[in-house]
Image (cartoon, rainbow, N blue to C red; front, side, top):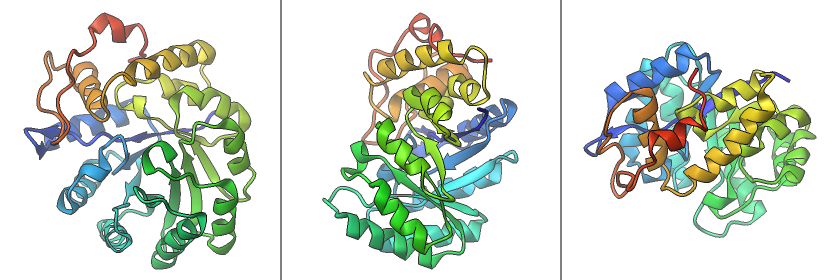
Length: 284
């Protein structure tokens, strides 16, 4: 049942500027613990809040500071033109794998989603991964839509599915040649049992719960139970603030983290106590 765990990376800030030192510490943490890969420009990284220049700079820094892990570049902008331009930048930097969430904010049809991915897949000789997260994008990518795109484009290699629906997740698993990752931490163990290739899970930014699950830990069921409670707890706070706070608190060992996210996000108010968190996370 072993699979891959890819971290949908936070984007560390300090005083509203990208924090290279914190990013370097993050890369050391990821490599030391044996994660499979890193997804820069993720939703957990506040991708949609970054300026074009910040987005580009972060992709560059992440590649520069990487310690040999598989790298995925999130390229989606609200404009398709900018999305393709960010993809070209990622390719020029040296990324071989790019990730694109479906177009967001507006109410897009499945046909428009097909046109969106057709444009990206035609533009690059790179491995492309779709990203289904209807709670953020406002539109669900249906399994039949992904199947339709995959039939026309061999370079659609996989999908991160954060649709929170195991029935539809099982339909993605039936698409020939498609690598399917679970994006919801609380569903990871069940998804692995169904045949998922692994997970792209946000709690991996600050703990090893999901890594242990994909590695086939004999304690996977109890770890999954902890993870369900952890994600319920995290959901009380603003994303990406809580993930950045817990990374700095648990991994960087900062006593009182401050100013670690970009505007208009703010520091976590009424942060959790160490006791509240430590009962739910694995750190080694």
